[in-house]
Amino acid sequence: MKDKKVLYVSSEVVPYLPKTEISSMSFESARKAHRSGVQTRIFMPKYGLVNERRYQLHEVIRLSGMNLIINDMDMPLIIKVASIPKERMQVYFIDNEEYFKRKATFKDQKGNLFLDNDERAIFFAKGVIETVKKLNWTPDIIHVHGWMASLLPLYIKEYYKDNPLFTESKIITSLYGPDFEGALSSNLVDKLKFDNISDDKTAILKVPNHTNILKSAIENSDAIIKASEDISSELINFAVAQNKPLLDFLPEDQYADAYLDFYLHEELN
Image (cartoon, rainbow, N blue to C red; front, side, top):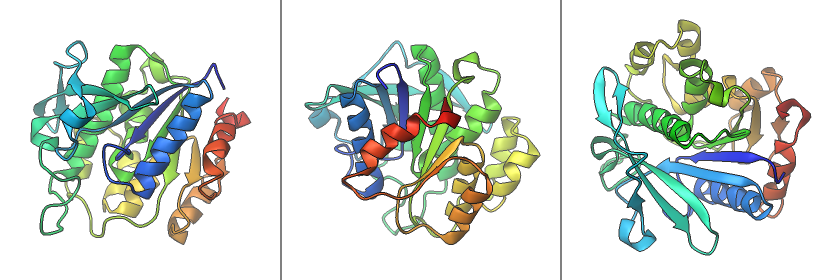
């Protein structure tokens, strides 16, 4: 594993956000890999909730400065970085004042999903990929956690399919239990088509609910991890039908080691 490079892309990571199944598992899996000698990079959105002073975030000028086109709008990309205390692990934060300055993650004070969550997810996916390109760092494995990160497999396999940096990268998506109810903007498909994402790839997102967003990630990944016990049978059946490597749920004291073994699966190498 020491020669492996693993990119962790998560919608939330401890200690920067409160402890949840996603934030804990994405951190612990990265930490285990890092301690095993794997080269790791972690990416997450820089929500307004993240305390920049406490965690000593600073902008990386050489990586910032580009604009990402989201549905025909120029949106500035800001990259910030911090090191997880005691772990010497770098975490990169994808930031934009329009999308991530607000003091919340996915919902407003009334519990309603932000209307632009679809654009935030697109921006996050593109921001991660463009930053990795600038770093000129070719990951062997890209491990995706959380629905906000779940458009990344689609963009790598479609929008960036001709980029040689990711030609050999294998994408693993971790599936987590039920999250938001309802759906994101009904215009998501149109915004994906603006990026020339093909009709056959956007069809599954015509109703952009939590299940279908994860189905898109499954469809465009090379392997799947069942990261929660409480995952709908619809999602599990969909994953099984893809005939891709599938790692079953494991308890807290076992999953990090199992993930390292899974990275070495013959179909991912």
